[in-house]
Image (tube, rainbow, N blue to C red; front, side):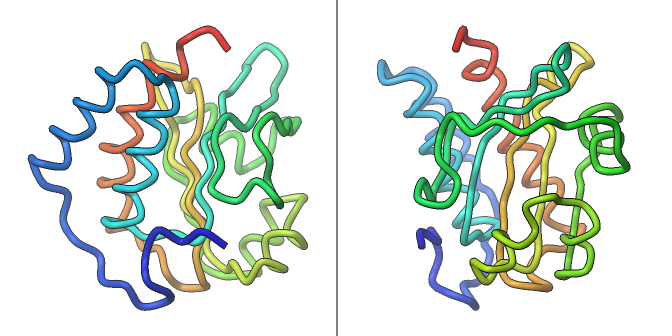
Length: 173
């Protein structure tokens, strides 16, 4: 399983101006959207930490998300789609554009239909960050780790990193 960080106790580090410069450089690369997706994944591993990292594009008209990037294609392949009808999770993340944080397996079971797969991978906490443009959610950046890993302190860094996903997610699929 790709972690991007030494498991399970890799220290977080602050996001730096050099990190933001690296993201800006990735957005200039010709290999889009892979360059930006990979750079955001790597920086999220170093600054927040994850065992699983995915990026989803949100289609509001269909109430559906589609996976456009993954660190674990064997379990969560690119192209996978999920219907996201109205729920507490979709209202918070997709409608209200607020970060969703689940810190333990019970919260994961309550929010996700695929909780058995998530928990079966040894994942016990989730940080879902909305990717927002022009007042609407266009996608999500999703980080998963062991139970108790994520805290509200991770939300600001997540939002900064997710902002670099706007252009790639707006690009025609």
